[in-house]
Image (tube, rainbow, N blue to C red):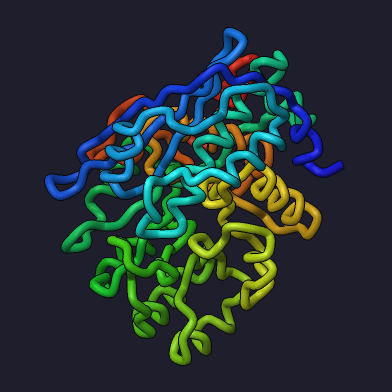
Length: 349
């Protein structure tokens, strides 16, 4: 039986829903906003988080309120099909990925509500046991690049591992410092983004230097050009992907058969597509790992819970939110992370 078959017929009753805004000032130029969808029914509530990156889309969503016709009795699969027929945005968003991010908010809230109304946990439903989650902390080195922040975190958390966003301004001195620290699990080249604030155009010299400096690290999301492909080909077994992976078909279409891929739940949009990817990776021995989207509320706990059930031993980019701080706060949970789910539903304590 497929993973989705284990949950598709879960029943849920929806009496209404509410939208709850969250925000966090990342810099003077950017405030991160997300929206929590709160589906209600039969005395229970199911939650999911919309991680769309455009703040104005959250303003519009929240000002419109609960306008979608979701009231009624459903199975999880029937509600998913209803969501497919709805326009969850007032107008077409700037990036297609946002369609999946918002869909995930409603789908994950529906899964949470269905499990709560059934009185079971996600682990119960899919017959999986939670295990502690290996995680990495992710981010860049600033402008100009510096290892000071990494060193500060390592002073408090000496076993911490990192996934770092490589930039062309990384000097030989920076690369030497990172090798000396020995804390890098993954290098994210962000070569598969276009029209976003994290775009990183292909730089063959950066690719060559990163490949040489970190011979054991995963290399995520390189751009494939006539100049970069010959550099990457000898290292194909450690190339992995994130931004392009929204479905099993996307994994199958990758240039090189992957040893691992970033299965980021919100990129998949639906429970069905996400669970199909878990099945596909497990059947083919592909070591999936999870990734976050600057969740500000319950979404981070949900992706940690999924990692604990389906891929706990890979370099999951699902660190507790404190690891995003500019200065390391004391007392953060360390890797591997013990995930504490609620007794029923799809949330953590």
